[in-house]
Image (cartoon, rainbow, N blue to C red):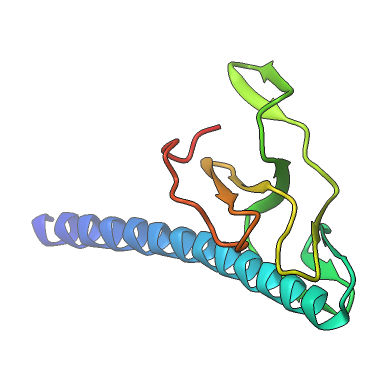
Length: 144
């Protein structure tokens, strides 16, 4: 009986740890996909010598000259304005209106924006530098 209890305990810990690793991997994959799409849209704008819009659809990121699918999972991606102008409190959670697209320009710059990675169990918001399109250090702890 003790052996069965120990086996059940080990199985529970293993499954819980595996699920946590899988969830973290899916979120990291979504962040990598967004970063790759941002780099692709920026390169396209420089190469085409005209502004390029990057848009988020349900399961992919699309820009003129390319697209990149988001990894399967429960992570949703939204573009947010650089400033928190319009917050709506719903059930104690601050919600912001997403923006439809981010523009990248031929000089390598882009609109100032943030990206929200929303999951069932929390989320993360990352701001991007409009001069380099690089992610900025997260000083909000991942909360809006």
